[in-house]
Length: 112
Image 1 (tube, rainbow, N blue to C red):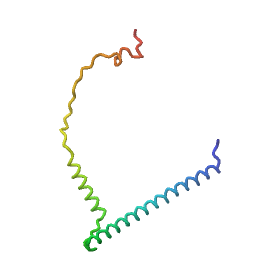
Image 2: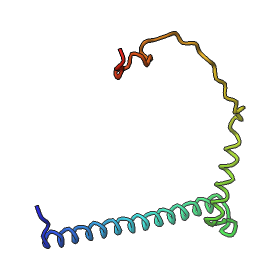
Image 3: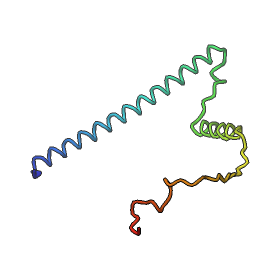
Image 4: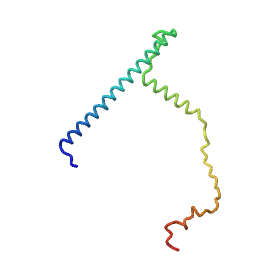
């Protein structure tokens, strides 16, 4: 089956439609993410105001501050793990002879 000019144009149109659909979905996801973030910030501000804090006391953190706090938490929680000795012990186990792992009974044994 040969591809004609009509098939090429149809494939090009389908490809462009697919790319546009993906871009539109990605834009919608970004907008939804921003909307959810703004809703969460507003709800936390309302909750703090209900607890009796002034709006001047409410501190908004930048992305750099959040990254620094999360990195500090990661490093702190990573140090809570047990320190291992990093010593590898190898115990030699004597195995008895088994013909299953013997090379003399291989399938390619041509010298009999």
